[in-house]
Length: 449
Image 1 (tube, rainbow, N blue to C red):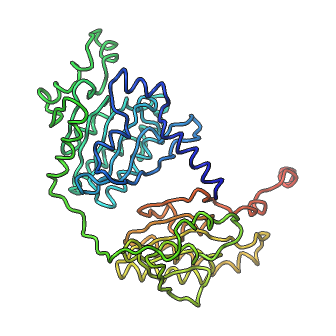
Image 2: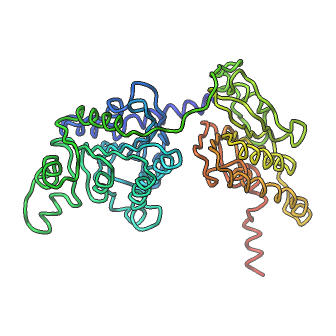
């Protein structure tokens, strides 16, 4: 786990640097703009916030895009929980890569699912054109962000945009589709095509300010609602806007929070090191729940799955945690418990760490023996998919194949999914692929037939 944490810290340091020293110098000195994390400090209340997908964009085929070129997360603004989507213009000028679009769509999905007001800090050069085939045409590409804005507006979820840099091409729709928009003088611009495009099309030379600057859009076009002389003023405007939304999230029904009886720091040493066998998941649960209390459900049945009720930070929750292989009995137990929580409106937390059964040679006998297990897992998948209560999934070890689906993996749309640094998710468990992959000799024999 400590090696995993070391890699985590290395990646964290990398994304904190954004586009690098030269890009930061251009952003702050030549363009006189505030860095994106400083912008968030000015916008959000003085308390911790939850950043989402901070390592998105690393190790991609088209290179590293730290934080996917934008920061997303949940924080409080004047006491109200909000989703923020903030472009980092030090990363490739804030242009949108395929991973950027994916991250922004995920943030909007979380905002809709949890009815969170959305604040956009726009500082983007538009789409990265060399990869436009992966950004523009399909259903879940760039245009989906504007569709989501319209849907959120229909759902009466407030949206506010701050134009604190370039707002070019498709990005120009973000402030115009928000309920209120703020623009910063001299650095904020909105246009579909910038000065170079105008010159190429008409031969006319025009400055960014004259083409789509703050004065034009606040005094002439009316695209924005508030003119800010400097960035600090823009974020003050935004905080004031949030305070006038007359919008309240559902009241939290919670008891007094308690610390676990066991030290939470022990979790570092409890993270699974081997992915081929399980651990006693109660060691994890006892370090998460209030007072380390846990009311187990069906304790003597399907013991490779732990289910039961507890409180975390005062909130009543149901826990579904792997304690070994997801067997026939464990799957039936999980299906029953998920339906029970759905009936009682109790949120669910899934702790994934399935220990795969020993690899077997594929045979008719083995296939027949797995039939009941597959049906039971299918029943659990149906229960998880149809449960409308909030669901949070944490992968604390390894989770493979259909077990990942039954335990509310990404395909089953949990409200949030978190991975520990040591986590592994794959179609096949380690050591199982040999039973399915043909050797060169076998392939040659097939070709010779």
